[in-house]
Image 1 (cartoon, helix red, strand yellow):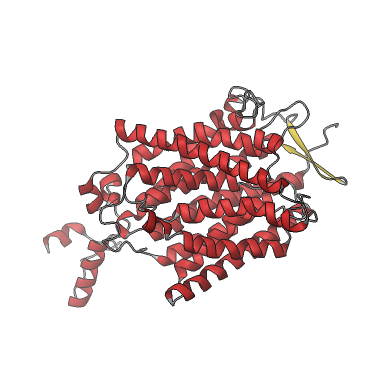
Image 2 (cartoon, helix red, strand yellow):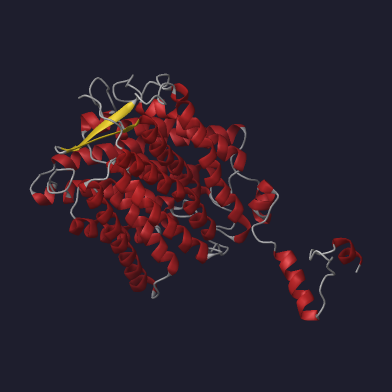
Length: 459
């Protein structure tokens, strides 16, 4: 096919979608930050921002090449040297052509796709951090993030997202197995969810787990974070159509309705089980729905998306309690939401897919038999096992060498102060100000309005 001139509309769609997905990582920082105790909020948010900074650099240096370079290992790995440092990709001659449908052909710069896929890598790493909140050394987390991205995420992204085209050979799940994963149920959510489980096992339980209250310290932050995640997720899913077409429109609607259904299902489950629907439940249900519809958004009808969301809301609401029965401390329910939700969404394609949807495949309930179902199961299991085994190896190696777990004294005092010499809330200063206001005294101020700290100190 003769390359066309760059389609500015498609390019704008991809870059806008990438920006939406980038916003999801700060949104995740707020979501996770509000769920931990006050003494841990900065460290929790820093783990997301640290991943954002580090993976951005690694993706440019060699990550993109490992994920989307020409295959060098039977669908297992892209050539890490082909696009080292993104060499050759800045040229205006280096474009990607996508045939969205027989009447729509769009061409966009390769660098737009580089940016779009970069933000997927970033948030996948950041998602893991919720499983080990309150107890992981920040320096070791950063080292882990770089290693894990390099030997787990980058290869898995090649398996799932790199489609063969022309002389280019891509990954085995996308091209040989032909499992459907439109936006990352396997590569992102199953991958991060099982990695979170592995690290929770390596680091062990938090001091006082199941004995001391470990409630979210700021549910307002949690709700804001969930809202930003929902907003950004439209770029995550609809942006994966890679052009603004009918498929992107269907995916957008499916993402909206599945998420709403999951939030409702989680709230009803809470009401029946606990007597009260909670804001934390609503926020968690939103994320569960987003996770579950991610792989299936191009394969199901809007009604099918509602079913995906309803099951995800109930299933994940129940699954978050598994940690108490099985004895692993998954601090912020990464396993219950991302692993379980990702597995359900991936397998749901085998049941609920309809050929009328953009993916064009019928699942079991639409007369397609089990052909697509077994493909989905194999893809999900392969990513789960690969990520679990390698994460356990990386985690144990770091724990035994430089140490991954924070010492007990620092954990009890607060990880924010121990790791960053900061606190999220200057409560001491607030108390002093309130005491002064109640006593009718205020600190002397200079003419410019600033507190005169010399006079305050001697007052």
